[in-house]
Amino acid sequence: MKFAQALGAAALASLASIATASSPILAQYWPAYNAEQQSVSQIPWTYSSKNGIAYYFVTITTKDGFEVPADQPTSDIKKFVSAAKANGVRPVFSVGGWDGSLHFSDLVKTASKQATFAEQIKSFMDKYGFVGVDLDWEYPNGVGIGCNAVSGDDSAHLLAFLKVLRSKIGSSKLITAAVSTEGFLGANGKALSSFKPYGQYLDYINLMTYDIAGSWSSTTGPNSPLRKCSSDSSVQTAIKLWTSRGFPASKILLGVPAYAISFTTKSSSLQTTKINNKWSSKAYQPWTGVVPKGAPGDSNAPTTDVCGTKTAAYSGQWQFKDLVSNGLVSSDGMHGKNGYKRYFDECSQAPFLFNPSKKHYISYEDSRSVAVKTVYAKQQGLGGVFVFDSAGFTNEVYSSLRSSLYSRKSRRHELPALHA
View 1 (cartoon, rainbow, N blue to C red):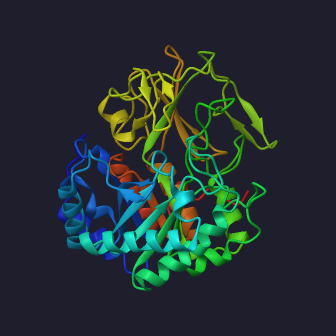
View 2 (view 1 turned 90 degrees about the horizontal axis):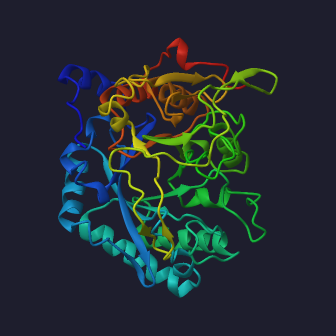
């Protein structure tokens, strides 16, 4: 998909003037595997904060280290690094991801392997001009996709590796990590009692506060709820977990998904649920377990994943831009169209679309919800926010996110009773 026309020069200059090096960071992941949908030149660089971070996503782990997938030309890496630096943004490359974390556990298992892996990362950084690395291990002591190498000592080994890596690349380079809302897990499968030691070596963690609901859920629900309403986790609970266990709030970047997820409801009418004797919510509906077709490119043709598991199902996912271009919602996300009605759930502070004739329920982010999240991130003293991924949002939503992050004044709708 093509990125929409940029804002006018005056508007961009105004936005840039309120972001400084000490301001919250607005980072974004660029999906290099989807370069045909968004080339390097189409990345919305103007919405990144100055001295922000742009992530080249993704390189994948191998038995001997990591590699760039064959469908990602190295010429794009050079273009990405050059463009990021030209726009005052720090280029960082990611290692891992959902499909690429199979060998992480083995790569950091021993001191010798840690040293080798750290040297490989440094060499890659030096070769292409990256200023840091993002460790997207999904997940330490967690199965992830299903065939990852896993050890009860993964989190301990990761901490040891971070120390080695920091020593190898020096203090001027960035080390970030994409992390779960559940924290780093110990050998008992529960969150460690303290995350403070990791803060000695990590510049930031990218808190993946999305995929809270999905095909595994018993009801429909928000992809990225602010509050814990009827879901297992939320933005609030994730931030509380990480900060209460000693990780600095200023080193946390809050994840904002630019994609939507879909469900097929059992009924053509929405039921109202009372939550915590406070909110009347229509966000949590009984559903059939059948994920409907998402964006036009979504397919249910048989595929085999990296574990060798065969599936034949729709993902049900949409980039927000696809919702707009296919006539389901307005470009700011505030109005449903063509049979889809927009609802905003006060408990989770998240919007969703519902089409009663199709029984389609779509959880997404709009101009209001991204503003709420960024204001909350500021209230909690976080280091900023990141978008996954850069190809997803329209100018209107990006502008709302950015202006809310850097404005000293907050619009009324951005400030619900967030602490309730």
